[in-house]
Amino acid sequence: MSDTGYQLIAIIIYMAAMLIIGYYSFRRTSNLTDYMLGGRSLGPAVTALSAGAADMSGWLLMGLPGAIYVSGLVEAWIAVGLTAGAYLNWLLVAPRLRAYSQVSNDSITIPSYLENRLKDTSRSLRIVSGIIILIFFTFYVSSGMVAGGIFFKSSFGLDYHTGLLIVSAVVIAYTLFGGFLAVSYTDFVQGIIMFLALILVPVIGIFYVGGFGGAAESIRAVDPSHLSMLEGASVLGVLSAVAWGLGYFGQPHIIVRFMAINSVKETKQARRIGMGWMILSILGALATGLIGIAYYQQNATASLTDPEAVFIDLGQIIFHPFIAGIMLAAVLAAIMSTISSQLIVTSSALIEDLYKIVSKKESSDKKYVTLGRMAVLVVSLIAMFLAWEQSKSILDLVAYAYAWAGFGAAFGPIILLSLFWRKLTTWGALSGMVVGAITVVIWGNNEYLTGLMYEIVPGFILCLILAVVVSLMTYRKNTEIEREFDATIELLNEEK
Image 1: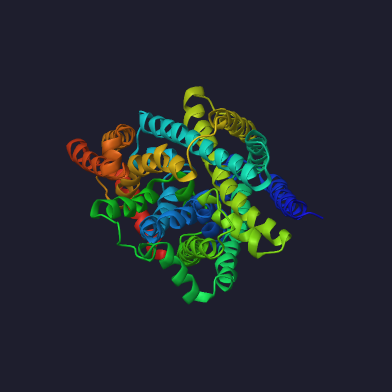
Image 2: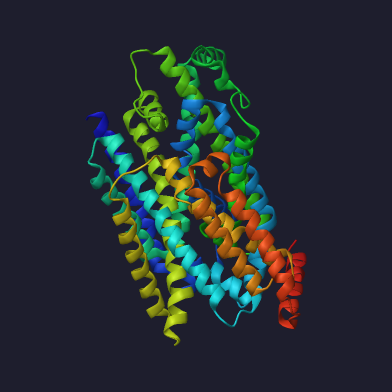
């Protein structure tokens, strides 16, 4: 059997496993809370790895190693910022959001939590936040589908559109039928595959380049600055890269996992598992990029046409074709885990936060679940249309389509204030959210400004300032808000 044949078998086994998990989750989904939040039944390991897999996308296995391969360790500042941001997200947001979303009318989406937390009777906060989720996530899902098409094109020589359709069909199938449980369980498995792949490639690869000494010598031969995080770095550049970590507080597809965990107490164990997974995976990605530099310096006849494929190429060089196929499945897992997580959150926003308000009448859970599945399909088709024309690299799509920055700036400060500050008001949250999102779009469309600073920084700061100022101007004491805030603190203390 050819190498490609072995690799295709590994990919087919992986995809079949995802569909089986989707079917299993379908059998366990009976109502809207199950479909959109898994019945708040996730254990700490599933919560941690599903959040990590949903977060990292193809950037971890392709974008980051590729950036290190081209520019060296100076590109690692983004990883530093993301690690710090993820830790603070687990520490500050996870336990409080799990408790507060339960206390405040058992909220199952971020927009419904904000509405219930702030007692917004106008429904405007829920509508605006639902629309922001819908717009940004449609582009985010589209970027994941582009990555899927590129994956099959570079790995198997398939037509870009064929790869796009294959990835989209499998993700849509298990997300549409299995809902949040399918997304979480598949993300858990995908997280394990990604972790093992990112550990194995550099651990085995180091022997191919003569150990640590041989690797360092070869990297210095290419460019000594590749081993430095400071060479070629500017203060603004480092701050801009580290600022990626601010985005975590406002990513609905990540923080919704905190709402779904079984109990507040389990968030501590989930944090330890999640951060361990993330740190080791990022170190593996950094090491993969560096080993790639050393390998191709030592093997002049070998060539790497696409730096973002360095992980894929090294896996094919180092391992038996079937194991190399599992490495390819890891890349696919990173891409698909993020797409599915974003699809289910977008579906939730459409049905729970927009449709219910527009329809103004209650329907059965069975109907809402059906509508949720239809929403997954509609959003997927729109994202596929946007992805049909391949454009930009994976890292560019995530950064400059404004999705990460948009969510971080629009929701991040509002989520933090809602959890830690009693005086946040509906108008404060609305004004901050809108200004944060608009700032990201305007800043991100100006080449001079984006070159100066990543757009999440001004967006986050303006959102925070405006939310505080407007809240102080419009604050009126609400006994129900005070009661829920105190009840949340009490629940947190009980489950410490």
